[in-house]
Image (cartoon, rainbow, N blue to C red; front, top):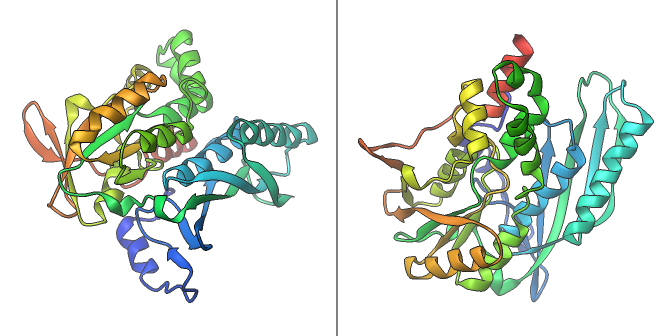
Length: 337
C-alpha cells in the first residue's frame, strides 16, 4: 500500500471486528469520528491519538495542535497530552530540546498539560516521528459526534483550505517551489499560515458551539476537504458542495499549481467543518467573524447516503476522491526525483 491513511473501505472492515467490552465506551473506533468518548458519570473523557510523519520543521507544534483539534471537534476541551518522539540516529541534543520547546509552547497556548510519554533514538529512521495521545473532557449532554449530521443541514467551513498542507509544503519543499518561480514573499506567507490564521480549530469549535445547536463537527486532516466530507458521509448522509463557495487560500492555490497538486485533497488541519440547521448558519458565521475567524457555508447535507457531489459552473459532478493525501503524493515524488 502507498503512504497515507488506510482506504476507508479497508479501515471500516477492520473496525467491524472491534467490539468494546467496557459498557462505558460511548464512542469507540469508528470511521469518521474524531475521537473516542468514555462515560465518566456526568462527564465524558475524550481520547485521541495522531502522528506527525510528513513534517520535520516544527513537528512538536503540529503534534499538539492536530491532536487538540480532534478533541475540540467533539465539543470537548483538550486537557492532557502524552507524547511519543522517535528520533533518527542523526538527531542532536539541540534538536531534541527544540522539539520539547515546541510542545511546551503549543500546549501552554491551549491550556494543555504534558503528563507523560516516551522518547527514543530509533534505528532506521530518516526523519523524526511524533505521536500524540490527547485527552479532554466534555459534559455528557454536550458531546458532538460527526455522525450527528442531519439531511438539510448547512455545512460551514472555517478559515480556508489547505492551511496545514500549504504551510508544510512551503517549509519542506521550499527549494523546489523557488525553482518553480514561487516568490519568496508568498513562500513566507504560506509558511506562516501555521500561526496566522493558525492550524488550531479549538477556538473555531468553541465559538460555533456557543452560537448555535451544532449537529456535527469534523476536522479535515489527511485527505483534505475531500477526505473530511467522505468521512462525514459514512454516517449515512450525502453532501452537495458548491465549488465557488470553497475558500481556497491564495497561497494554497499557487503552491498547488506549481507542484501539480489539487487543493481539495491536501491535508487541511486549521479548517473545521460544522453542520447546523440552515436557520442557524448565519449566527455561526457571524459569531466566528466577530471573533476574527472567517467562515462560509459551502453546501448542504442530503439523504443520498455516502454520496458527495460538487456543483460546478458546468453541472453537478462527483466530488474528487484521492487515493492518498496530495502531500504524501508530493513527498513521494520528491523522494524519487
